[in-house]
Image (cartoon, rainbow, N blue to C red; front, side):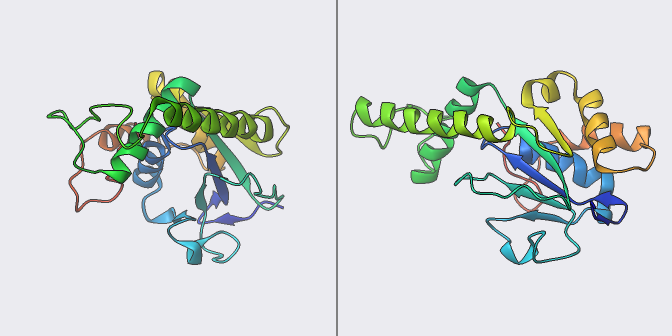
Length: 202
């Protein structure tokens, strides 16, 4: 039986890195407001669904592909075009090593920074392609009960309808259309460093 907390189904969001989760979580936070109890399991293990009974949305990259599929929750699985996803993933990797290595537009100058040769870059890409393909095999090409697939490109191009469908997956309550529109609008406003959900999602 799927648990509910604050009339929201307990939901585990399995997301490949750089697939728009921070943007989506921002929308959901603004829509559900204080009813959403959110956990990034790598940063807040004490709030994980299996530890804290009040958590109703959990982010999980399933890096080791060892996350068990459980019957007490719903799932959102976020994916994105592989090339765009891996490019964004690599840029994040570069910035995590050298946060000052950006140009005047705050974007990464070179894809090979911090890799001593092109071969190491290729090895990195091949490793992440392998992870990406195995991620799809587990979470997309298998049948997962109570699961909804969220494709970043669809979310970006048809945000209202996609989020509406996600909300229907997460709650039995009627969707507040005005609140949804406001949540989408507010989620796209740039946030300063002191505000929640400040991370870039692309």
